[in-house]
Image 1 (cartoon, rainbow, N blue to C red):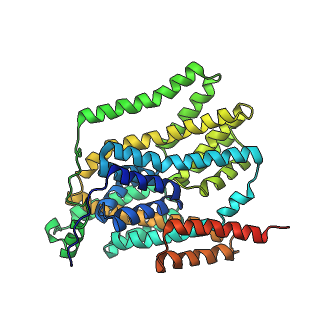
Image 2 (cartoon, rainbow, N blue to C red):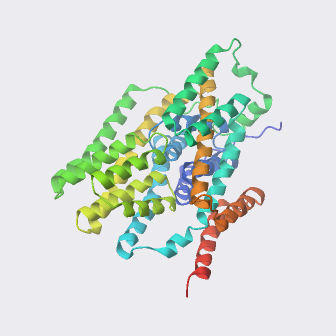
Image 3 (cartoon, rainbow, N blue to C red):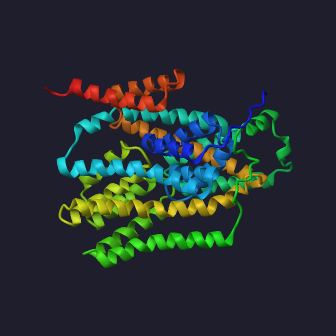
Length: 440
C-alpha cells in the first residue's frame, strides 16, 4: 500500500471554522452528527485516524449526556487541548440553542409556523439517508469479524424489539468482550497488525500511536476541573437567589435539568419520556400539546436532540411568569447551561485517562465489542427516524418522503454531492412543494 504522509496540524482558527459549521449542519441526531464528524475529521482532513475516532466514540457512548456533543468535545481536545474541547463542544450546542430560541419565540408569538415546518419536510428524509450512509461507513470499518456482526445484530434486536436499556447493552458488550479476551489461549499482539493497517494509521495526524499532550492522570488537574465545574454550577443559583422574584422555581429548574443530564444514558430518546412526564404532569410547566410541538421543533433543528429540553425550559419560564419572553429566554439559557455542563467535565476529565488505554490490547479488544454494540444502536436510531419520517402511521407509507430518502442516498453516496449543499437543496425543495400544494 502506498504510504500517505500525515497532514499538517490544523490551526485553531481552521478547526474553529469546522466546529462552527458543524453546529449549523449537524442534523440527523447522533448517528448523522457522528457521520459528519467522521467524514470531515477522518476521511477528508485525516486529522484523526479511524481507530482513534472509534476509541473516543466508545468512551462517549458509555457516558451520560449527548454522545455526539461529547465526541466533538473529545476530538477538539485531541487537536487543541482544553480550549479546543471547549470550543468544539460549545459551538456544537450554541447554534442549535439560538435557532431553537428563535423558533420558540415565533411559536409563542405566532402559533403554528407551517412555512418553517415545510422547509424541513424534505430535510428529514435527507437526514435518514445521511444516517444510513453513516452506518454503512462506520460499520464497514468497525465490524471486523463475524462475532462483531453478531454483537451488532444482537444489540439492535435488544434495543429495538426487546427495549433493553442502552446502558445494559453496553455493559453486556463489555462483559462479553472481557470474557472473550481473557478466555483466549492465544493473545493477538499489536505487532501482528496488517501492513496496510499500519500504513493507513501513519497517514493521519493523530493515530493510535500518537501520545496526545496532557494525557494521563493528574491529581491537580482533576481537582481544578472539579472546582471550576462546581463554581460554574453554583454561580447561576446564587444569582437567582439574589435577584430572581421566584427563587423556588429557578432552583427547581436548575436541579431538574442537572438531574436529567446525569441520567441521559443512551441519548435523548431514553430521557425525553421522563422529562415529558415530569415537566407536563408533575410540574405543569407546559401542556401535552406544547411538548409535542417542542419535539417537532427539536427534530428539525441542528444539534443534539436533547436540545428539546431547552424548549421545555423556555415554556416553563413563559408559562410560569405570565407569558414573559424575558423569563422564557432565561429559562432556555439556564436549561442549556445545566444540561450540558456535566458533559464538559466528563470529557475533559476523562479523556486524558482514556487516551492512555488505546495501546492496551485488553482495552482495545474489549472496546471493539462496545463498538459493535454501538453500531447496532445506531441502526436502531436509523429505524426510529426512518419510521417517523416514512411510516408514522403503519402500514401506510408516505411516498414523497420515501422517494426523497432514495433520491438523497443516490445524490450523497453515488454522486458525492456536498452534504451542506444537499441540506440546502432539501429545504428549498420542501418550501417549493409547500407552495405548490398549499391551498389558494
